[in-house]
Amino acid sequence: MTDDWRVDDLALCISRHARYPPEVRPGAVFTVRAVMTDMPDLAGGAAGTALNFRGVRELGPRAAYCARRFRKITPGAPDRFDAEVIDLMTAVQGAPR
Image (cartoon, rainbow, N blue to C red):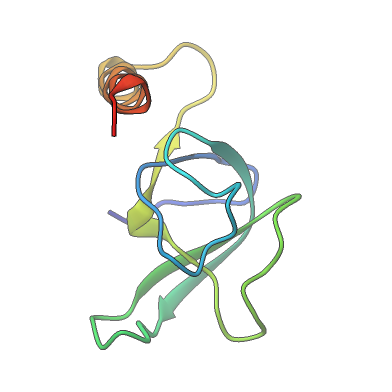
């Protein structure tokens, strides 16, 4: 998903990478501070969009959070897709591990 990310968008985390700090976890919501396009995937995958967030430490000078691990939340009331994602994330958080 790309890729109409913009600064100040809200991003819902749907999965996390082991390198991410603990606060960047499924169900958490962040405000986009920067959007980078064609960011190389260090694991060998295709380049894609990456994000940095307000109040969340950066991963390094040449690293950022993979946009594929986030879903854009539109301001105001959630649309049907937003509501479905939020419901799924809430169900996952409540599931025993």
